[in-house]
Length: 546
Image (cartoon, rainbow, N blue to C red; front, side, top):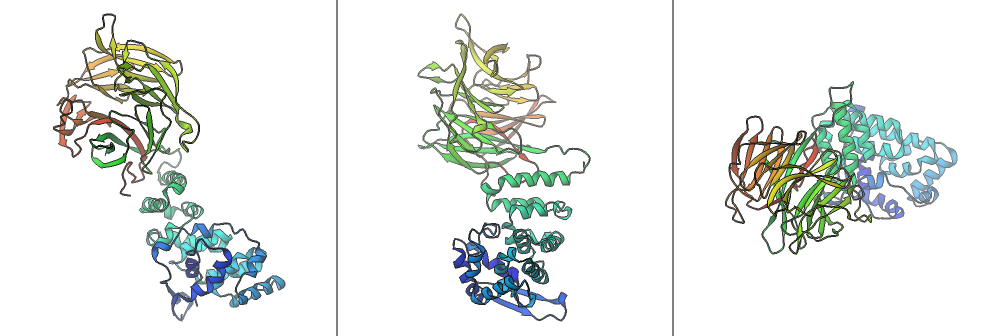
C-alpha cells in the first residue's frame, strides 16, 4: 500500500502549472517514485517508506501555495480532466452516492479530495483512508491536508501526533511549509508551547519567508510568551532586550554605512557594512522610529537634503522624501509618530527651520505622499551643529550652542515643544562644552564633551551635576545607556586622527569609569540608535547571519 501523504509531497512540488497539467502528470510523476513496503503482521506494525529522486530539494516550494491556494476552475471541469479510471469512478460516486473505500487508491487521494465537497460520502471515505495510513513522519503533511479540506478527524489525529513528537518534527523540511493557520492550531497546545525548541522552530519557520510571515510570527511569539508565563491571572508584561547600534561611515570613494551593534551586556554582537550610497555622506544624522518591541524598527539617516530609511530586520534600505532645506550636520530625533530635523548649516549659514515627517504613514510603504513640512523656527542666536537631541515626555531636549548680545558663545539646554511649536531656554552649562554627545537614562541626561567633561542634567529639576571626567578625550564617539551604566564608544583621539577605538563604561552608582578593550572598528561614529527586540527571540538587528 502506498502512502497518500507521500503523494501529497509530490503533488505540492509541481508549481506554476495549470490544474489540467497537474492532474494529467500526477500519475506519471508518482510512477517515478520508489515505494518500499513491508507487509504488516498487525495494523501497528505497518511501515511505509517513501523516497523520491524526482526533484532536488531546492525545487520544493511552500506547500501553502497549493494546499491553501484557491482552485478557480469549475468542479465539473476538474472531474473531466481526471485520468480516465478516476474520472469514471468519481462520476459513478456522484451518481449513486455510494463509495467503496477499498477502491480509493492512496496515490490518487488528493484528486478525490478536490471534488469531495460535492459528495459527503466521498469526503468521509477519503478521511478514513488517510486516517488508516497516517504516521508520525507524515503528520505535518496530514495537518495541512486536513486544514485544506476541513477533515476534522484527520486534523485531530495529526495534531495529536505532532504535539506528542514535536521534538522530532519541528526541524523537518515539512515544518517550513506549514501554513500560518496550521501553525496557529499547533500553538494552542501546551505540549508545543512549553517545548524547549518552540522559539527555534518559529524562527526557522519565519526564515523561509521573512517578509510574508513577519506579522503572524510576531503574533505567535506574543501568544506563546503569554502561555509560557507563570503569571496566569494577570496580563503578561511585554519583555524585550535592547540592542544599541553605532552608525559609522567608512572612508571610501563611495560612502559605505557601517553598523556596530552592542547588546545590553556591552558585548559587540554585530559589525558589518549596511549599504553604499553616493548621497549619504559624513557627517550624517541618525534616528530610529519604533514605538515598542512589537513594531518593526526603521532607521532614518539624513545627509544634506537626502534621507534614507533602513530596515535593520529585513536589511533593506530605500530613499525617503528629501528635506525641504539643505542642511549639513543636522540632528534627527523621533518623538511619537513623528521625526524631526533640527539645525545644521548650509553655505556658512545656520539652518533655523525645524522640519517634521509623519512616520506612521511610512511604516508600510514609502509611496504614500507624505513629505517633510516646516513647522517652527529656532531663535537666531541658536546654533545646532550635530547637536544632541533627546525626546522626553512631550518635548525634545536640545544641547545647543548659544550666542549672547556680545557675540560670546556658551552651551545650554533648550526644549522644543512640537505641539506648541515653541522653543524655550532651560539652563546654561556650568562650563563651556563643545562637540557634545548625550544619552537619556530615566529622567537624567548624561552629556559628554570633546574636552573630556562628563555632566549630568536632571530634567525634573533643571540642575547640572559634575561627574567623573571621561577617561580619554575625543570627538568621534557615540553613547548609549544600559541598566545602570553609560557606555561611551568610539575614538579617543581628536580631529580625524583615530588612534584608538574603544568602549568605556561609566557606573552611575559609583561615579566611576572602567576603560574597555580596543574594538576593531576604527571609524568615526556619526549617530546611534536603540532597537527593541522581544526577549524570546534570537534576532539581532543589522545582523545578516540568520
